[in-house]
Amino acid sequence: MGHWPTGRMLSAVARRIEREWNAHLDAWQLNHASLPVLFLLSRAPLSQRELARASGVTEQTMSRIVARLERSGYVERRPHERDRRRHEVVLTPPGRTVLAEAGDPAAAEALSVRGLSPNQVEQLRDLLATMLAAHPRDTDDDELGPPPAPPARSQVGP
Image 1 (cartoon, rainbow, N blue to C red):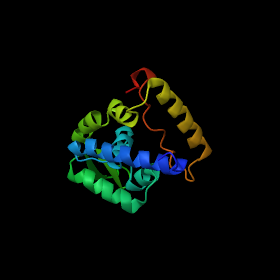
Image 2: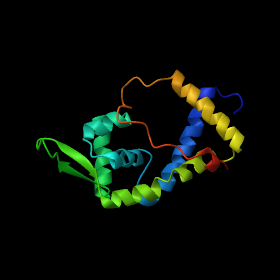
Image 3: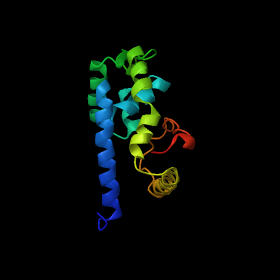
Image 4: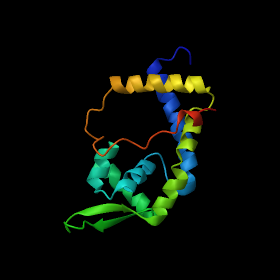
């Protein structure tokens, strides 16, 4: 792997972590695509279009994610309060419960940084922040706000 280009190594690590994260989330019938939707809905009900834009996916993809969450009982589609032609997606009480359980940032952080020392984690976070700044998104899909804050650095480590 030492001869792999940096991008390939980043991609390989991301895919491996994503597979492990999906295996973890499967206990709640969730995956890496559906959990962020629950986080977004924990702030306020949103339309499917707003969810798609905030998640950086197509409306068709979001429709499948919402349908899966709806079958699990974690969200409901309801008529909009002021505009009955529109629908909004609402987090249900079971959805809030599963978000608290499955959305524990400590579990995600532990899985993501396994094998690294606290110093290496800090260096990695700094490097990733620099890389993210150098590769801005080409859409305004951050308009609904940033993702939940990461755990404090004292909680980070193998």
